[in-house]
Length: 272
Image 1 (cartoon, one colour):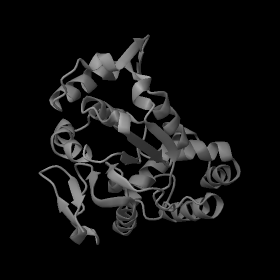
Image 2 (cartoon, one colour):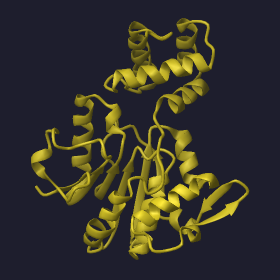
Image 3 (spheres, rainbow, N blue to C red):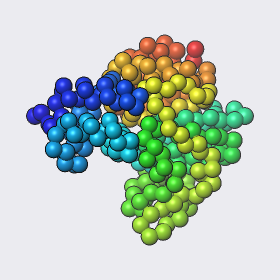
Image 4 (cartoon, rainbow, N blue to C red):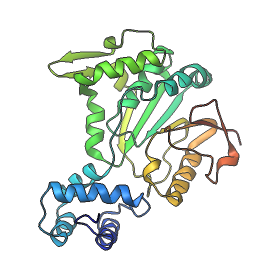
């Protein structure tokens, strides 16, 4: 069923976003993007597409809300515990051989997986020589990530994920509970650098031994996925690792000949 924003409207809006703000969503998966834009249009009760479009073009504050609402920010700590177990057992022992470890969490959303990684590094006694670069297109979610504060109601699930990932400590030692929130220890966030970064339009900004980008590429069309994979390839040291989400794959990407999948999880190593 057609929503309030038609296919033609969507094309106009995507052109506006490029022209006015430099945000290129043209190669995002259209059905998912259109569904989220229609939801925002309805939620904010715009009487017409023309007014919706004018608001986005003319009001920078509303544009921030638009980005916050149409980008996908679903995440949790130790999501897919077996993936984290694989990192613990097979990737971190290799990273331990480096004098300094740089990890990029691309599309980090509200940062739950960045804190998960910091806990892994701490337990492997590698946190002191690591830097975690956490980037997202959405500055609002980055603010939440930098705060290290998450709802206490999520901790039961996060603790179960942590234990399933072979975590050995009491998960509650990593945060302080206050009212309905849990604030994670600053020891973890001190090794993190938060910054906005647009995977669509910006270039590489460092060299990394591990890049983690999970459940972001599923929202991109194939052509854009290929460009992002090229960006990751430019940003990854030889013998570095690229970790993707459970429904994503590097198998069809142009750079696949340079990579080898490690184990059953979606983790590839750059071998050429």
